[in-house]
Length: 139
Ligand code: SF4
Ligand code: SF4
Image (cartoon, rainbow, N blue to C red):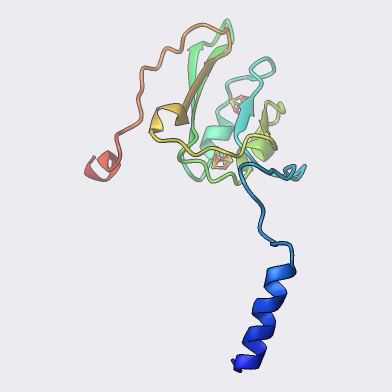
């Protein structure tokens, strides 16, 4: 680059407003179609397991607690999810939705990435915990 051009660029950048945004102090609204964290509406869920079967990342587990009483439990491994939306497409009951306002998902430990919910609202039956960093490769 010629020194003259460089000086012009420097002078221009001194008077121009920066194009960068001061995140997290300034936030733009997320697009309506953004695929954020998955949310499960347990009421219409039939426990069919299609969401888990079709998930390419093995991020969903469906546990049938009581078939007769229609009590199911869903485990969502948020840290495995690729936000592809396949489970939402696969669910015939419309139980799954990707939230467009839940996308700031960074955390210091993986505990919060394991989300378990039971249809009857009771404590989850599946006692699982996320592996510590690096444990997955060792298993
Ligand atoms: S969005 Fe994709 S990766 Fe995430 S749980 Fe659904 S199917 Fe699996
Ligand atoms: S969320 Fe939908 S696809 Fe998954 S088990 Fe329930 S009804 Fe089946």
